[in-house]
Amino acid sequence: MIFFKSFYARLSLLFLVMVLLLGAVSLVIAYDASRHLFDEVEQLLNREYAASIALELQPLVEEGYYEDNIYEAIHYMMVLNPMVEIYLLDETGQILAYFTHPQEDLIRNVIDLEPIKRFLLNEEYQLILGCDPRTESSKKPFSAAPLVMGDQTGYIYVILRGENYDRSLSQLQSNYYIQSGLITFIFALLATLTVGFIFFFLLTLRLKRLSQGVRAFQQGDYDHRVEIGGSDELSILGKAFNEMAQSIEEGIEAIHKAEEQRGELIANISHDLRSPLTSIRGYLETLQLKGNSLSEEEQKEFLAISLKNIAGFQTLVEELFELAKLEARQVEPQMQKFSLAELTQDVVLKVLPLAQKEEVQVDFQPPLDMATYEGDIALLERVLTNVLENGISHTPVGGKVSIVLEKEEESYVLTIADTGSGIAAEDLPHIFERFYRADKSRNRQTPGTGLGLAIAKEVVELHGGTIGAESPGQGGAVFKISLPRVL
Image (cartoon, rainbow, N blue to C red; front, side, top):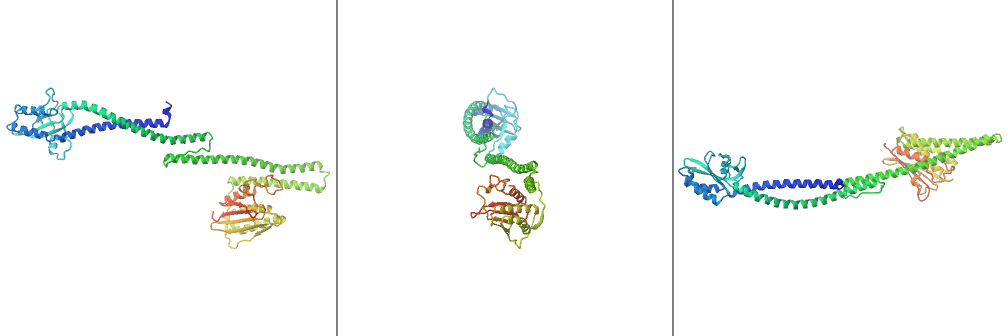
C-alpha cells in the first residue's frame, strides 16, 4: 500500500480507471453503431425485395385476397429466404396474413403505416425502421411495397431480420464482439497504458526532483538547486524554487554577516568606550589620591584630558544614536531649497582651522551657474563635514584637498579628492561600514570615531543619492557624492 501513497502511483491509477471507462464506453458505442450499420445495409440491399414479392403475387390477387391462392407462392419464397418474415396488410395496416415460423405468435395485429409510407417516398435511401409484430417496442429494418387486391390496396410488409435471424445473429454476434472487442481493447489498453505510464513517469520525475530539492533545502543544503527543463508550469515552479532558494541563501548569508558585524560592533563599542572611560578613571583617581601633591598646572592638565575624553565619549554615543536612527529610517529630512555651492563654501570655512592645524590646503572654486537644491541642509552639512575632515586627517603636511561641484543632466556631483596615501584595495569595500578603520589596531591617536562615513552614506541614501570612493593609482583618495536634482 506504500506504493499507492506516491503521486505517480495515484496518478497512474486514475489514468488506468479512465482508460478502462473510456474503453468500455467505446465498446458500447461501437456495438450500437454496428447494429445500426447492419440495419442500414440490410435495408439498402433488400430495398426492392417487397416489390419483387408484390410483382409475383399481383396476378394471384387480382380478383381479391384469398390466402389459399398465395400460400404456395409465399411458402416457396420463405424456403428460399428463411430469415425474413412476410406480412400481408390491408389499407389500414391490419395484418391479413403472415408467413413465418408456425410456432411463433403475433403480439400486435396492426402495423403503423407511417414508416411504410415514408419508406415508399424515401428517395435518399435513409434508414427507416418499422414495427415488429412479434415484439411490443422493437424496431427493425423492413421492405414494403403496395399490392392491389380487388377493390382495395394493401401492402406487402417484409421484416428483413426475423426472429430466427436475430437469435442466430445474437449468438454469433456475442462471441464475435467478445473476441474481437476484447482483443482490440487489450491491445489498445496495453499501448495506452505503456505510453501513459512512461509519460506520467517523466512528468512525476520532475516533481520528484523538485520534492528532493525542497527536502534537501529543508535539511540545510542551501546550495541545492533543481534542474527542470521545459517551459510549462513545472519548469516555472522549478525556476521559482531556485530563485526562492537563492533569495533565502542570500538572506541567511546576510544574517550571518549581520551577526558577525554585530559581534564586531559590540567589540568596537566596548573598545572605544573602555578607552576613554579608563583614561578618565585613571586621571580622576590620580587627582583623588595625589591631588594635594600635584601642582595646579598638573591638576588643570588632568582635568582637561578627562573633559576631552568625556567629550569624545559623548560624541561617540551621539553618533551611535544618530546612525541607528538613520539606518532605521526614523529621521524625517526637513526639506528646504538652498545653494549647494554656498553650503560647500560654508563647510570649507568650518573645517579651515583643522586644515591649517594639519598644514593642509583646501581648494574649492564655487561654480557660478549652480541652481538651488532641495534637501535637508543640516544633514547634508554633516555629510560634507565628515568627508572633508576625513580627507584632511588622512592628508600629510603640505598636501591638498580639492573640492569640485558639477551639475549633470539629472544630478549634482560633488567630488572631494586628497593627496594622501590613498585607500588599500582590500579596504575600499568596507570604508562606509561603521567603526571600520584601515588601522586595525584601532589606535585612539587615529582621529574620528569610525562612524562619520557610515553616517554620510545613510544621509546621502536618505536623499536618494549615492556616495562612493576610489583610490587612483597615482595616490590619494577620491570621494564622489551624487545627489538627484529632483527627489
